[in-house]
Image (cartoon, rainbow, N blue to C red; front, side):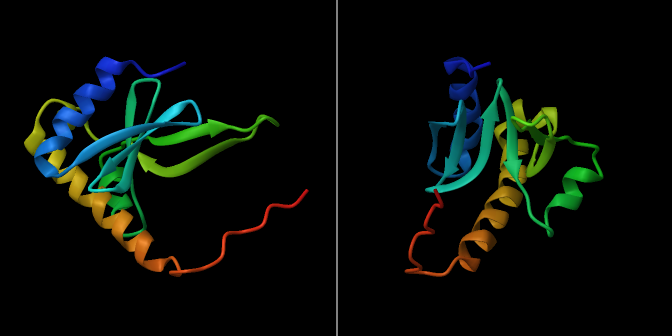
Length: 124
């Protein structure tokens, strides 16, 4: 399935008070960015926000679902991206609280990456 332009626009509208929000198509879904950092993905008109070990418990305790995908071999993998609660898609103020969590996870992830590291070579 694909994402509707209306849903992407709605997500960006809810995110706008928190910073500069944008979305880019990727792998049949959309990456969602706040101030240039990826903080979420949208797949089949469902938003998932980035988490890490520090922020994930807030999503898990609310029984919010992770983004899952199925490999070609049929294996199901859960990712570190979780759905925010419904109220985040209804109120920019509620979205801002959940975006803070996603942005903090994105910033921690970015700080762990080595600056100037050469790109990984892909095997043949």
